[in-house]
Length: 271
Ligand SMILES: Nc1ncnc2c1ncn2[C@@H]1O[C@H](COP(=O)(O)OP(=O)(O)O)[C@@H](O)[C@H]1O
Ligand SMILES: [Mg+2]
Image (tube, rainbow, N blue to C red):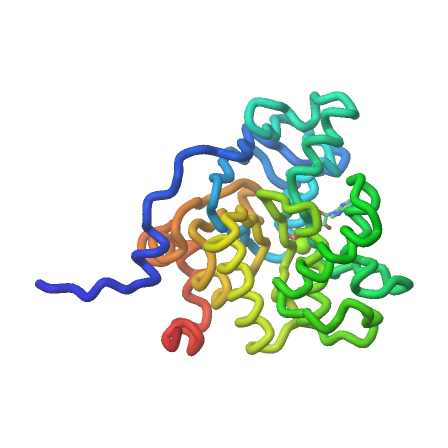
């Protein structure tokens, strides 16, 4: 029987480079005696978009904090190459932490600074660039995320989608090969959300940026993610890792259920 290859399936199942940028080994995350997730074991592969999903409160944001050096594991390791983020000394840790950009769940722009100043801040903190270079680079980053005219704007005057984009521009300030985005499309209208998906694909396809993205939005997951890591709230561990469409077809039952919510979406069928 002849089958028509779905381009999204083809893209999602294209062979990925095997090289891991980050390796998570037997990671257990806890607050005091309360274990949030245990035995997480996965790699972040160079050039991929890895989505992290799971029920509310299962530990997605907590996992991001472990990946970016803000919360030490109760057990296990977060390795950048062969360097253990939490065994590194302060200088090495600082160096490793400059290899990635981050946006937080709430966006978290400094409201007392203009958009441009927000984007320039990491450059001023971590590089020797002079003021003119910082401004040039910040304007370039804002143009990249579609905010070319917003350098002098106050964050409060931006729409939700524009704030998320500005936060991504700031995350890209130091040209990191890797960015972590916590629920980048949460709270956005469908159009802003689709635009953000496009930006994420642009980062991956044109800048070869590796993207780790917490998301519970199916449209977004099916549109941009090469692989999905699913954290299960009940068993408190990962129950699936793979291309989203494969997991929807043949993943564990709970993951299939999660990925079939609302069945096929309009954005998915029209893209
Ligand atoms: N600082 C904290 N102290 C204690 N418990 C926390 C803290 N932050 C989060 N938690 C708990 O850890 C669990 C996972 O939280 P979180 O990672 O924010 O979930 P998610 O991002 O998946 O919705 C939740 O039950 C939350 O209440
Ligand atoms: Mg969260």
